[in-house]
Image (cartoon, rainbow, N blue to C red; front, side, top):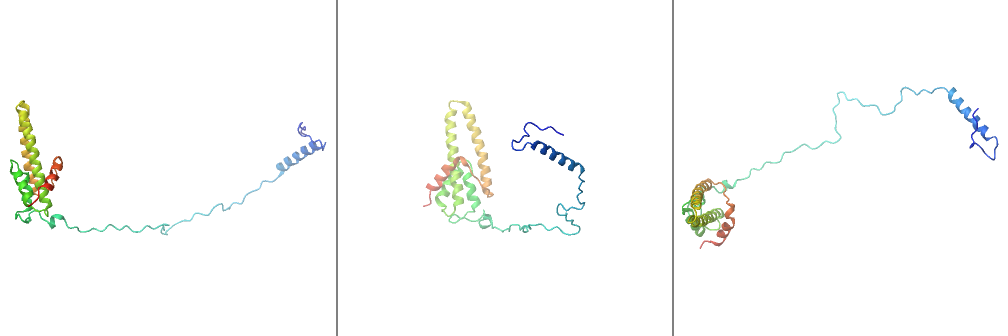
Length: 204
């Protein structure tokens, strides 16, 4: 029999420790003599897994069928206005007019100035290339003049002037060829002067 502890006292009931010890012994004896309980074998703890054999899987969300974007046959600008069409009030093909302002040796400078004076504003493409070619030749002339003055004091400046003139001659022929073929040409270095010339030099 277990000895009562000093805390197992009840001032109102002197036999309280003995009753507690007897109750503990009865509970221990019951646990030792009780039979083991067996759980049933076929216990449905969760829903059985559904087996798909020959059935086709049906998704919960069926996205709409992909429809490729419609292809529209746009008409190209070149088909509306071919590069060899005749320009109004001039009578020359467009590709020739836009190529002339890029030719070297002063030809492009004169051609660009004349076109800005006679080509109407209804021909913005021709006027743009005329202004750009004219601005290009003005820039070449200014750089050539500066290098020419510098060449009086240094042979290297005279040599650089020759290299610059040769390079610009080759580039001028190249730009004229591209313009004749209808390919775009944009010389960013003369943008401001091009816009100024196209705006200020008008037809009479």
